[in-house]
Image (cartoon, rainbow, N blue to C red):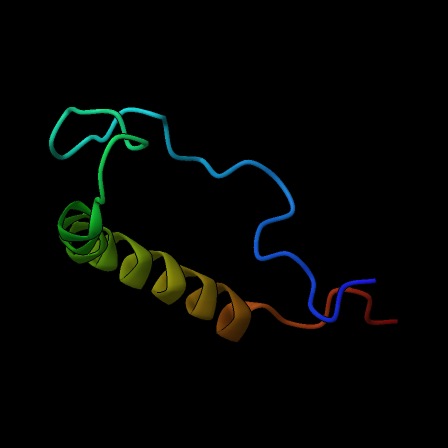
Length: 65
C-alpha cells in the first residue's frame, strides 16, 4: 500500500515534444525549458485566478428563497 498518493492521477496536458526547444521531452532534462514555460504561463495563471476571484466576489446567493 502506498503511503502517498501519486502526483498525477491522469496524463498531463503537455505533449511529448517540448514547445520551447522542439526536441522530445524524454531525451534530456528540460529544467531550463520548464523555467521558461513557467515564466510565460505565470501571467496567464494570474489573469485566470483574478477572473475566478472576481466571479466569487460578484456572485450573490444562488439559492435564496
